[in-house]
Image (cartoon, rainbow, N blue to C red; front, side, top):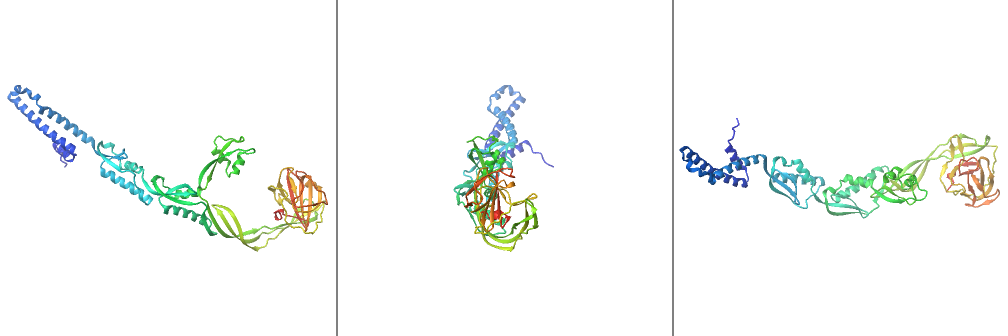
Length: 503
């Protein structure tokens, strides 16, 4: 059974637990109450004996008022102590950051935060100014919880001795120490080794100069090693200006700078399809912070494409063809040396090559019935041809749907000069049916070339031409849907793939 304490006992307990300031006031209140009680007792005795009329002057005695004041202060002090308590305010650089129940509690939470940060970084952290505690009184409900104090102390400007990684003279990121920085760089090299696990790595080096700079840094600015590694791999978005030129479009600008049209629009919210000359637009692209240069060698097996041999067949209608024998790819073993910059091959060298299986050529019979035949000479042709016009190939050699395409189509504008692929004698110059305006040149050694769909012919049959000489101009004559050059190479009377001869 719990014994209920008397009011006097509770006052005594309060006194023993109160600070010196309260102890001094306790002594004052006790003396005042004692003096007041004596005066009141004397008055009561005078009242009983009838002497009170003679002693009405008690109201002028200081002890009476002291007793009344002491009672009031006693009641108010008891109420105040119930609602409030002695606390400590934590200050950093003159600013209050929290209220703790005791100085010891604040110091323990502070030490816990510091230890947590040091464990995370693996090294010492510190504050540039000390944390101080000042005694005060505060309501019990206004004290901060341990969690709130932890957050407040965690947010202070903690410092540590960090290392700034500088790439090509530009600060890249901050790490706790040189060891962490070196680990990140080594991990980047290891990732490229894993990507090229099937190759022999000869060297991995960084193209840019890398240096480390030690200095005090804020703990919050220190990067995690994983984040630093991701930054090195992915790079940063960099924006630069571009001035629109005549003929530009969103697609052409994006393509020329390795961007998507969507990326171009994202970097220029107000941009439309209508562009003005000299209009400035933003080009935002991810630029790598670091270029990793990897030299490696690898042995690869590759297919050897089979040739298509065309044999003229007078029994087939001109323009028709029939497969006499299917071709088979060969196989070769090639030793390469690659030089890569990040994931892009910048140099490729063949160190050795060995044929494992020879290809079997495909034989196609091409009809000549109703057409003109040429008897090409077997002189001293070189077998090496130059491109008759500059441009991309829009249709290759071989089957195109159900029809065999006996040459290549080279894209070029109408009127562009066509040059002889090699020196020789002109054996045809004029209209060639579906070929339109055509020139055929005999280069000797059984080799000849055909230039078709010309807009004009600048040479005559029987004329001798030199390599590179203008023989006509690009057009769309004959069976053609637009201006281009149809270019054929014929060897010993049959068409062959021109790409095997062009240099």
